Image (tube, rainbow, N blue to C red; front, side):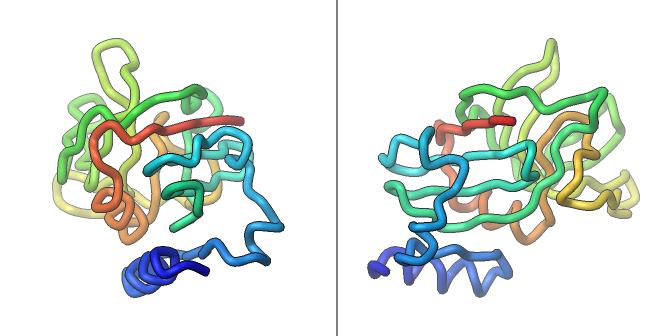
Length: 164
């Protein structure tokens, strides 16, 4: 494990993120994104079938966690995208929900879908659906601590690959 992987693991671990350092054992296991990521800079890979997100830096996995993608009738779009906007807390006028740690990744007509923390109602009550299962309105939703870590880690323009 190199120094960068160790430090990223230490920082992410202190934030409560499931960390997968690029050790020999982990590298031998592989991830679904291994054939897609470019290995240059920061990249995000989302697997809809596994309901999991991996964040890579220079080809090494620096964090991974469960997500909730779009429910069957409101599926999350597959493709290659980039983080096109970042808002500490976005507001959905369509769903009347607050979405912390918003990172917009693609447009659906006049609205933007993205990666964000579990949404909240106007009064601050969390909308709870289980991560690890497709249940969102189309976005990639993570637990708050995971979304916060990813939001801090990923700059605008970060490539995002979403696959089945």
